[in-house]
Length: 267
Image (cartoon, rainbow, N blue to C red; front, side, top):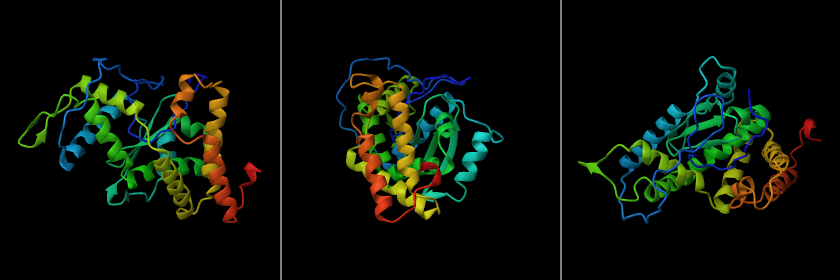
């Protein structure tokens, strides 16, 4: 049974790892609390791809992924049918059965949607959120963010490689990487561009783009229900992103200016 309190995380990077079962999405604490400055490291595209794959595999192992016959999986597969690639990057989708409300995308096109996000979103709203995350992949935000987090966490002491092949990360390094990604954020410009991508993504797929604003409203409502204050951890998660109210207003204005009719359910 899900907890009543749902932590709202609006971010787009490969975020952090969760424990299996229907529990809260948790971070593995870094073994070394001392932060070191990243050494000059040159990462090839092949090495980056290997690290991203290693990390998403680790994420899938440390989270409860819904099975092929699970209603969450069936719903997500139906929503994303025909979405095979973006900017030449193959896409793949999975659902994490956790109580937190979130979705994220990695640079390799791995999109992960949390079951509790699916619980509160309509199909069109959920597709808008997915489009937003895919936008970060298309704009290379996910790749840049992952590289920065990698260099300042798991590889802060340099890269170990043999014949140009990056050595596998230890469990502790993967935990450090998760910590870094959890604290990483996109710029307001990157978030606005991803919002616009999600808006156009809905239009391209024959859906009402008002759903972008409506999805943000639901996240805003959860934030308020959680009693988030300026000093709260929940509110800090929003602090470096554009204000949700501003994002809602921006998406509403765009839909209104384009003459798009608001869904009956939102009137």
